[in-house]
Image (cartoon, rainbow, N blue to C red; front, side):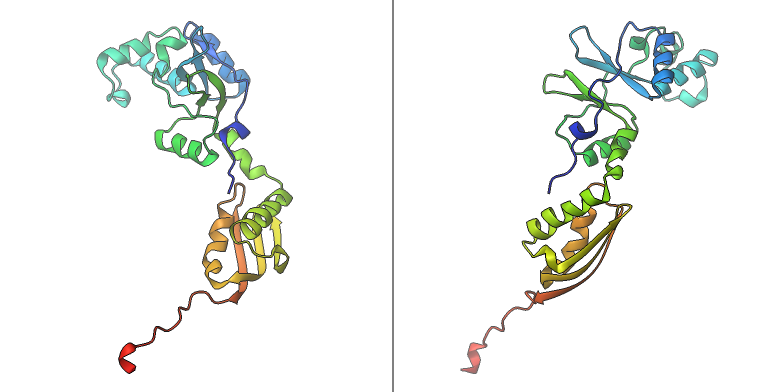
Length: 228
């Protein structure tokens, strides 16, 4: 089953900065573009870091109170460096998490959640920037038209995974919720149908009432040779 990839939802021409971009310029870009972070590029176009609104807020706090307990996990030297930062290069995460264009939207979402990041640069195998994704971009899969979701249920689940006749199943998709009723070919398909539909990008939930034509869960009785 095909899933949406990062290349399908990424911003292909994202706003970027360099390590020399002043922090005032960085803040202006984040506010104007209504984004939470930007890739920081080298002169060769490779990603060398990510600078975010959280980094700017961290500087603001440490500038007022470099020895504040809120950032006690940072070394004294690091806290002082952040407090005195003047450019994006001074603040940026120099080991940013990145993602490839072929990664699924679900993979990117898991990466963001696991590492609590809101800006993922999309890079090629050489580290060159291809785009960027944020949480709002990943949510675009939930805006898929209902008719598009229904077509994927028919083509990839019923006709594809099950090789069963889609005409025997009534399918209604409303606001991303799929409701189905009808006959599947085999009983073993009953437990698989709803999980497969829920795995389709953009499906909010799936409900179904199915019958089956063939019970393939019963095994033929093996004769007891001691009876002969």
